[in-house]
Length: 202
Image (tube, rainbow, N blue to C red; front, side, top):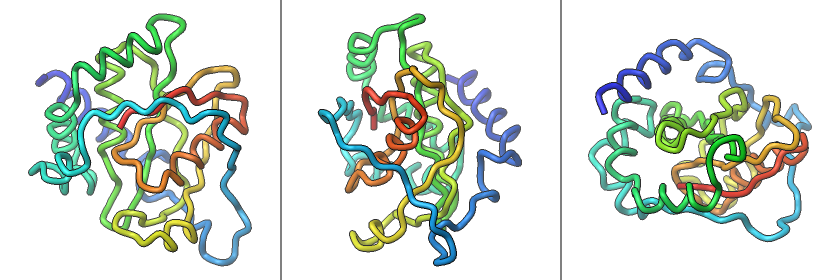
């Protein structure tokens, strides 16, 4: 476990100044932009693999720090709430090796900081399942959905940037599913470039 935490911490420090983390997002909802998220009809909702209840996660002592970008807190939270049986189910459901899907996490910058939970969850799942991670697709705007009303979530929708590998299957990783708008928009970004979404752990 120490090796995992160390590698995650190094990865976060190395990438903290890169395009894919905080400080480089644009406000696509500022009234001056016509950029809209991609949406596609659902041809059967993909399987969702739930590791822990929302109540359990939010009551964890590391939750707030993890939500605001602390890597070690996020790793502690994920390692203590990840369900081994659900991980095994993911492996049985999607397979391994060359046929395994690519993990893609929801990179969300909020007013309180960059939510580290999805990215660290994807890292740990990748380590456990030996699946590839897509690291260059990021949320390009700040939407502040945490604690927001239904109207605010609809008015300020997540827009994503980054190249998808056409023909590949993706599993979206996020910490929670609320109204599902962010997941739907990331799915749209993937489908618009020829990828396919086959599941989502949270």
